[in-house]
Image 1 (cartoon, rainbow, N blue to C red):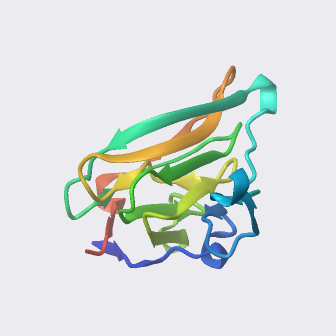
Image 2: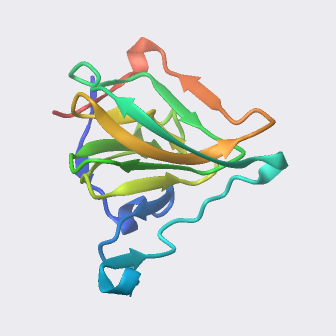
Length: 163
């Protein structure tokens, strides 16, 4: 059994797969007569290829059975995809360079104040919530064309997230 170790999500560690979306360390300025801070330009939304447009949605997720088995990876060739938690609860992010190469996987623990923006064509696991009723704001592509590639691993090649 191959166990993947989890590491904290950082902008540097995640950079080759996309953006970490967080206010921490970002440029900001005061708005609304001093009653709010705005943090701009946190991620690059890339969704217009082949006539696509921006889709904003909310997903309510539930945790997967433990230990979490990694049997599927996916990517979106026509657009980026942002997941941002709507509550302050940790969640997991799993990416790889090549779904069939276990050594290319990276597993991260994101805080409830960190979102991610998967670059177009970045291999990632579907949403991995740790708590029941976890809600996420999603910004991704809607439109014509095939925007989902999946690789299903044989059971003998499944990876597991280390508890």
